[in-house]
Amino acid sequence: MTNILVFGAGKSSSYLIKYLLDQSSKFFWQITVADANINAALERIGNHNFGTACQLDIHQDELRKRLIKNADIVISMLPPTLHFLVAHDCLELRKNLVTASYVSPEIKSLHNEARDLGLLFMNEIGLDPGIDHMSAMKIIDEVERLGGDIYSFKSYCGGLVAPVSDNNPWHYKISWNPRNILNAGKSGAEFLINGIENKLEYHDLFKKYETIQVPNFGKLAAYANRDSLSYQHIYGLPNVKTMLRATFRYEEFCIGWNAIISLGLTKEIDQFDAKNLTYKEWFEKATLSCEGNTIEEKIVHAANGNKLATELLDWLGIYANEKINLLVEATSADILLKRIEEKWKMQDHDKDMIVMHHEFEYGRKNINAKLSSTLIVEGEDKTYTAMAKTVGLPMAIFTKLFLTKKFKNMIGVQIPVSKDIYKPILKELIQYGIEFNETYSD
Image (cartoon, rainbow, N blue to C red):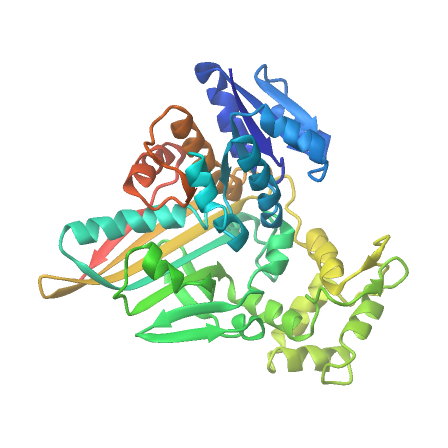
């Protein structure tokens, strides 16, 4: 029997684990789900004959290594900072690894050793990164096959609340790891526009958003995401003049979050007595050095004069006169995280939505053309979300294809940009309603 070990039973794991369990009797798989919260693992497994739940603090070295030793392949749904811990064990114990996260410098450093051992560490095989790579490379390869030369590529993706469940002024609810939402953009962004390299720091990122008209959806705001420049090489586009990867939100979100950043409320280097303070007392202490005498003046100044920010922060309750009730010393980021988890929580009936949109401009036979490719996926409820579907299914399908020997000579640290990977995965994703709509124009 093949043993598949899944670390993490959080928000993005529902479809992944369900797919593996649904396939388990056919392929004779045993699915082991390990999580610090045993109830979360048990909920994912249910009463399935081929499923096992295990309680694990990921820093329990002996148990973690024992689980990995008994596995044939390891899937990590842990926070990105913990992948290296698992990857190091996978090297030591000669196990293959799958994650949906960006390749960190630490993971990248393992490439030669993994390759020499004949191991595969597949990363960036979720939604963004993941489906974005695969769907983009499908079009890039097709344009180049037809003799086209791509000179502009823009890619946008966002996890949003579905319109039917959109009932707050931020137009946002949490369908994935809330800590990732809090940290989004902290590394800044680098991108290429009309041959000119642009660099934005964290404090400028959410004020310099652009608005995009998405086909069959409407207007969204987008802020630049991480390092777009490196994808010139990854996607094989060394001569491209515009290269941008960006994240979708609504305009109100960008206005409000820009104010939060400017006020210093995402800092992780300060400390507050979160057990005894109110949100208002924390806010006043955290923004002591900010310009303005009143809370409203500070917010409006931080938002560059946009008074909508006051309404957004007031709704969020980050200066409400109520106890924070965190039982430890906490940073501003910790306190803000607690608040957004409470205020942006998805209710049982709520649905989320994924919107991904690519824009290509290319020349072919002396004719300039434009191509857009758009994916819109709506979730079922707060458990089977569009986010979980689009993150988990690519990982699950890849795992199945890998275990059934569909990939040849694929070793080392990899991401899904080759035709051998993206073609079968994109084809199967269509069965689950994950399909792009492409539009061409001259």
